[in-house]
Length: 283
Image (cartoon, rainbow, N blue to C red):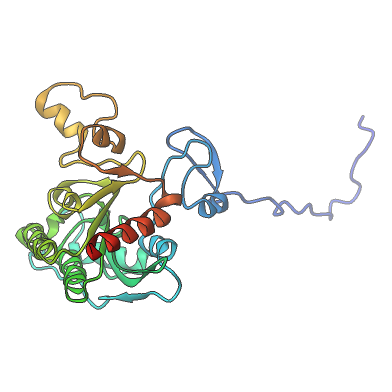
């Protein structure tokens, strides 16, 4: 016999008052730490324990690097479907979903503003838009940033985050490699600085073109940088690759990068670099 019992069965217990934590936390893929998403946002999407740099969206990066009052430009370009590409999902639908998800027309955003007191033109890639792949719109947008830097003699900074050329646009995508590289050659002839910032990941045709053509090539810690991915290389050569192969630290050690800069220090690093370039041009 129980000591307590409920005489009235009309009393209803409220079982809806539960604490919902879904979506509030994320797990670091490097150290396994559970991180409160608000803390991750405050820390510029960097794990506070191990320093792993999560991917950072383009608009947030521009906001972090440029002084208030900057201007977003070249926003009116949209990709078409020249090949009527259909695989598991039609390309048009992929574009619509990516545009809805990111609020962007394509995987790139151009901005004009200042880093500290120094004028700068930024072209920042958005990995969440079809893997940051480079199609005709991405190529044209970067080319416009290069032309603007050339015409105004303003330093150019391109932040890469891409899986490479966009296969759904075929040869139109591959043409962007030569188009941007030729524009950067004109910029170099005009002696206007170009700084390339490589983030995780920077691969394929982006690496094979503008990402490695900077007067200064810098990267975030732990970024995957290469042409083909390490798994593809291992399957091709049938050998195990060295530890950390194609990561920022490996590339810096082997002379492919000039520096590795943590995200929290990137703005001040770029400001100092632009100041140095300004003094060098005066001489």
